[in-house]
Length: 146
Image (tube, rainbow, N blue to C red):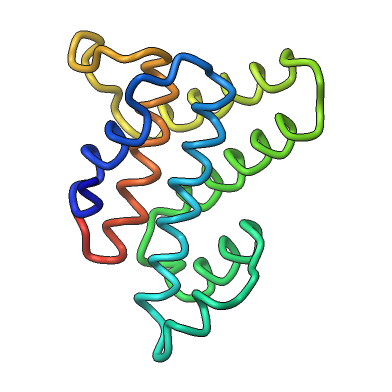
């Protein structure tokens, strides 16, 4: 898997997944992986970050403390929105609230970043995929991976 090229890493992780709920969970894990990488990169002794049992919310807050101005402010909000969606998915049996969260997340990203041309990306749930990629790419950029 090519972790040094964010779009390839995202494609390789999500290829052949037909279940949208699984896609949401995997996207959440990819963003968490990027946050962990950011924390390790900004730490003097990264092994302690990697050994810690930090929650996603902990990683988000500590990452923001270490790199707040390295990202556009909307990135932190978007990550929080994705985490809320994942938590709703994990704790609810109905999908209508999750679908509403996804629509808000995509709309929020679209209001902060130009949308790719529709024919540029041929995957399921293209708008969600694109929105997650934008967030993932921004975090990886802070670590020095473009």
